[in-house]
Length: 111
Length: 112
Image 1 (cartoon, rainbow over the protein chains, first blue to last red):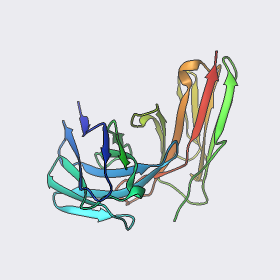
Image 2 (cartoon, rainbow over the protein chains, first blue to last red):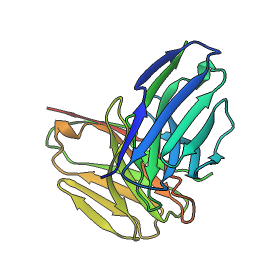
Image 3 (cartoon, each protein chain N blue to C red):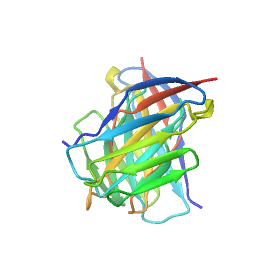
């Protein structure tokens, strides 16, 4: 069966510091991968998606970037965090069909 | 930008009551999914509806996709405290790499 791992679960970072969130998927190959951000108690906003190694599409302009160095690894990064980058970040995968499956999320607080 | 509007935003009911949550859009989706999310966790998929007019049942939950594939509803019968959570609908566009568009969610609280 397929599983998705996302870490860390919580992170407190000072303004101006770098960020690296990692997500890995097991049990499937060539998945579509996604990074979403969720405001408190609200819906999800798609930040990046990837259909293959090295292929990244950005949905909204922002202070973040994404990379896919391996087939089942998706990384969300920032060189210098802003206060507005605080939020709940979710990684997800899909097999190209309709369903998407989410990781447990990372609560990022920028102070 | 295609939007999915969910209503109501908040719902607080007593155990045993029935409720319906709505998800509406002016755009057509190839499929629509419903998720439930607990605080501090990722959304968990409940159901996917694909065909216009489709109805799916998951125990006490009934999901319906509108005939025109622009809207959907979730009906819960005899709600229980375990149904408490954030319910999210998400639409997928055909040929769109399954980039889901999410509604803002309905926060449901079921009190014993």
